[in-house]
Image 1: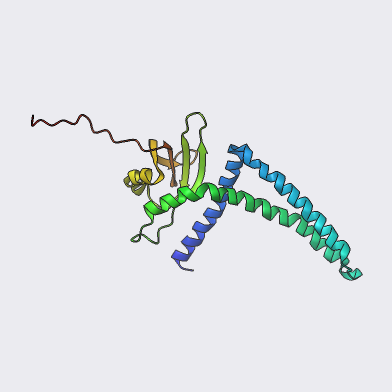
Image 2 (image 1 turned 135 degrees about the horizontal axis):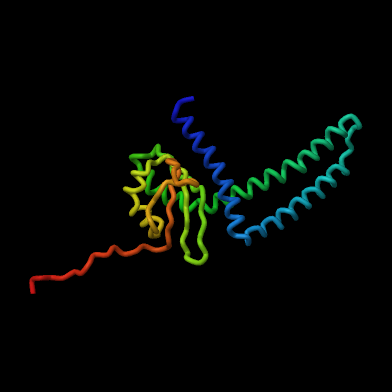
Length: 198
């Protein structure tokens, strides 16, 4: 395996993990979306009923009866777990999609096509102030984030509150970038404009 392939696979593993983490955060931050679990429970009940009907409608030889029932019990447990993980990752994907697409446009141009776009790791909106806190996992150095700060703000239609910093609990992780923002661009202050020809 060459370095490029290894880096791509590592990036994809991180993406899967952070989709799961982000999805869990969204379920905690926005309790209304937990209503999806009611539909999930109804779906699981229907699946179990269908499975019981399937078992009763088949005539299975005595030798295979234990194996068949064991497989069905395994499916009863395994299928809902896969669905739970899928739902959480889907919510994470929906949350991250727009922000990651915007940053991909800013950082991954034609000259830099091999660049790995930043992955949204954390996003939370303060209900009182409207400030959105974002943290990204990235392979792009801080220097480039600071250079492209205005392009990021233009693309995402935000203005930064404070500066772009390193992320993590201690704000010291080089591959994590954190910033706080609010909606809308702030016009650049130009001072007093006057014409001294009069």
